Length: 226
Length: 241
Image (cartoon, rainbow over all chains, first blue to last red; front, side, top):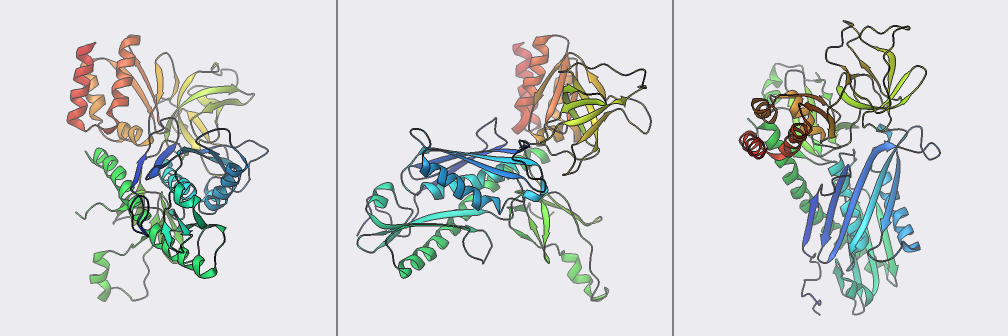
């Protein structure tokens, strides 16, 4: 069975990113996979409000804005999920009583939005110089009605799928995923198969991110050395 | 010289050197080298890992390792010169915005020749050039506008007139540390004074508003330009004036 855009089952869409485009943010990144495009902006470490500051670590706040309309419960849930994922990997103990604010704007959604949001935020945190334990990369899989599993599904594929699964992993870590979101009807075998496919896909995303970041750092380093 | 090594957060750093393996015969087997970790590196159990992205640097004499990367948000560190803006006055001193998460404290007495009877009177909005004296993650930073050892201002203090703008931390460091080509090129063309804060703020004062803006724009433009391009850019700006 061929996919609408003729990709292989485990093939990601064309990945694209750019770092540091928001000049008022401390760090920013735009990440897109095919038509799905997300911008993430980071502000921090900045002063936290007294009622929300923590004495021994930084507070992480996430705002997720959909492409169209006002934020709904779904977006609030996404904010909370992304916050839980990144809060553990940001070295918050280095900046007590401060706030790290992550603002994610969905520019265009065409499936696999949550993994694009996580990838964009990972890149943006690196651009902002916020200390991280590791890089976090995410990928989405969908199990279609004919039992085939496809990686990085478009919205059309997700609408026709029996289940979708998003996994986020920490780079270089052999422990389990940092983020798991599974929806629909699926068997454990299907879940495990999606896990493996996403683990491979996130390795490719990490390699892509590494190239992008090396490009940015090289450009800056050349100027510093000159 | 070894090729530039760029690291990402989570990368494990191999801090052994080529020389170490050849010297193993003369060294005692159990002797451990003390490695000092600078910005961007932390120790996780036995390994050293990077926590920010940048170029990995090491100094073989002092055995220091660090990651150099560019950022926009300043985190205060002791001894660094900063440009700040007074945002509040208190009984004991001023609160100065230096771009860090918390505003810095500047004591009334931290100026050249200041005594309890003779305190400087800075209005809110004054731009000051100071040096960080207290900076850690748990306290608000503190700055002083003189050298407390000698009692002289040494360039620190109130910066009157002129114009302050923000730039990236990397550009600010280049302006201070090296003989920045953009400042040299501008200096050949127009007279101006400049105070650069490591916190990514630069204060410029030239004869007129137009010249001040020209100098500020030239410095801002020079972020990604090399020496030759800087000189060309400054030349074009001065010609257009």
